[in-house]
Length: 121
Image (tube, rainbow, N blue to C red; front, top):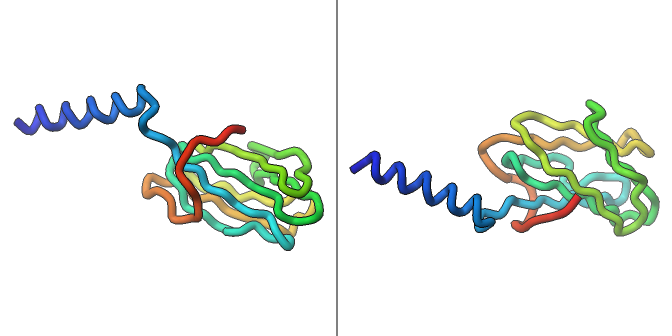
């Protein structure tokens, strides 16, 4: 009986993944007043991070390990990146290096601000 229940659970997860019913999480990080808010987020693998420049001057997001770098973002422009994980991604504003943030990707899921739903790059 246990193996049947286990197989049914696996089948349900695969069905949701294949039919698009399982949606990845999206977390928004706002850039405002020379800060990233929130400055640190905890997310699950597959989460899309969306940075939104809410400041009235340009900013750009760059990973410390050079794995990604946005174009210069004007006011209300966005940049998104889906994280694989697990691991820690430290990033900064390449125009204002004192601005820093951190993304912690782990199986524990989201502890940062965000909303569910798909997002583009």
